[in-house]
Length: 117
Image 1 (tube, rainbow, N blue to C red):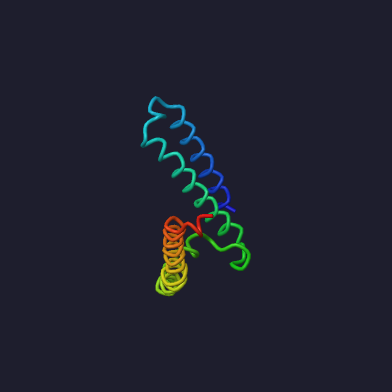
Image 2 (cartoon, rainbow, N blue to C red; image 1 turned 90 degrees about the horizontal axis):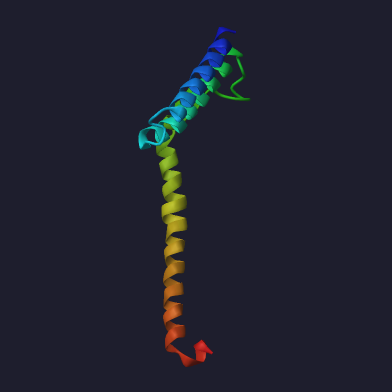
């Protein structure tokens, strides 16, 4: 249960820090405008981690972010193979073929009186 209270403390501290940065004298600087969403995201991940571990939520229902990151990092070779097969070999080649065919058709229509009508 202490992890749940720690999650509440992390949430309050993240909220207070973001509020202080957003109302501070440097609120419109690029650093603060980038820091506020980063702090919010890290706060969400911290609260998620602490609540899941503090309440012993089963992995099937909601795994902790650290477990997700570990699994993702361990699966990078498989994910890269799937990405290259799907995006690079399939979608990108189809997109390039479609753009090329459309470009050639546009030239044909522009040069032909029959097709222009």
